[in-house]
Image (cartoon, rainbow, N blue to C red; front, side, top):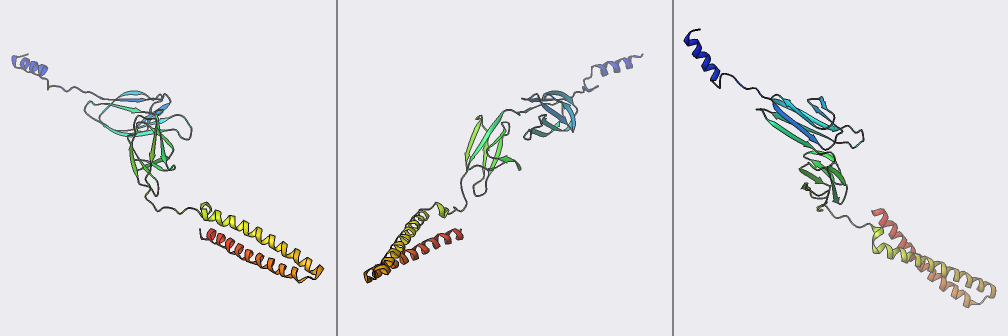
Length: 239
């Protein structure tokens, strides 16, 4: 081996650019439940909720879902891009939840543009922001804190609904007066019948006059009762 060859070998050996050091990205997934299936690009990688895996540069779709077959089992899906010997740590919280309550209840709960349920609703604590919406109320965005329960009061912005007629004071007055008028009508009608029987038995005109007077009072109270009851029916039909 001549001197020139030796020099070239030494330069190549000590030159840091003469070779490249290959490395992989490190992905670490941690969950708070041992019963979790973890899929990467649709391939099942692990079933105990925790992995540490070396991956090449590229895009990966991660799905972590509970193995429990109950109807409200949870799952998380993320898309990540790994490059340049990166270490990526992802935490999934299946048991750490926050109860979201609203006043009024039955409000829509969104994560970004996805509807996840209606209040009251338990949501994973690792969600950063939620959107609360209910027709007739202002939309609210909330940030989840450390509290296990969050109660949100929604601000009404719709048209106030009229109180039901059955709950109004007028309905109670009309109902009470209808009962009184019905009783008055029946009472004076019976009195008129009794006086008429006495008139037929005695022939005394005094009893006939009393019969007519009681009949008149009974007729007036019956007319008022019919007007009262008719108005109640009208209000019910109008609603």
